[in-house]
Length: 385
Ligand code: GLA
Image (cartoon, rainbow, N blue to C red; front, side):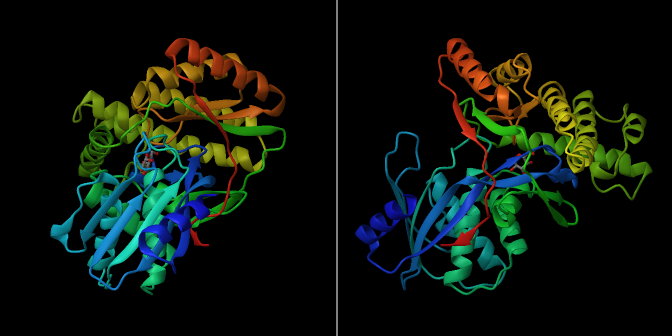
């Protein structure tokens, strides 16, 4: 469907001969705001993805078109050069520009190209639509210009694009999941060493479902501030323990030691992160034993931490979390960066229908918005089509 759409549009605008690439959004079972703290995450690529049609155009310009970029579906096009001074105005086009610039900075030659982008990763839903875009463009440019980057480098190029061209000082989770996703498996990623392991995920008798509050989040200042809090706490701890590079290395006792050297806000944020890293490790142990009840319990604890300590939840997400609890859902929490987007819910198959019916109805009554429901299907990462 998406392919037919972008193929037709590409031919209409730029002629025949495009190549096609795709890169997915992601879920994360547990381990939130741990990636930029050198900790672990447990994401998986999903069946919602970005698609690009692309072809070198023999000039030094990019012509880009994104038929469904903005919420009101007004088609958007952008044209820009590839020098640092040519940064396009349109936010979506800055991702393309950023990826090309980051590749250039790594010593590669990128020439002009035509590109059409479309997809069904909901924007601002905490499912990494931006990482999907960066990875799809990264894969495409790598291939059509024969640049020779591997998947690790492509993930890092996507992350650098966020840092340097979007202004979000994100961790590596989203881009890694987009680039390394594998059908049927979650990825247990050590965000410090980038060592990873595929964890087959097929919870018998349970379903994994996302509920989108449709409160669109835009990660930026609030996200970066939390990262800075973590860095300040690390700096305080490192005065006494010079080997501590990330909160991942710190213990709650080390944190207590610096309680009077950091603000109470920084303290509570760091406490959440240290606890969350441990929660992920505990959840991974439980997963090995197919103990989904423990995994679910950890997910609720994560939600409470994200809501009360890290303060990245919102009324809509907290409401859905409460409903999940009332319905006997095994695990539920805000997913991704927060400030809106989706809850991720691990629910017994026999409770699924009642939960979805109740959550949808109650949410609509309370907020006058119909939430969107996505059953999670774990799929492969970025690739050529
Ligand atoms: C966003 C960022 C990720 C990660 C999550 C929170 O999705 O892009 O790097 O920090 O938030 O876990």
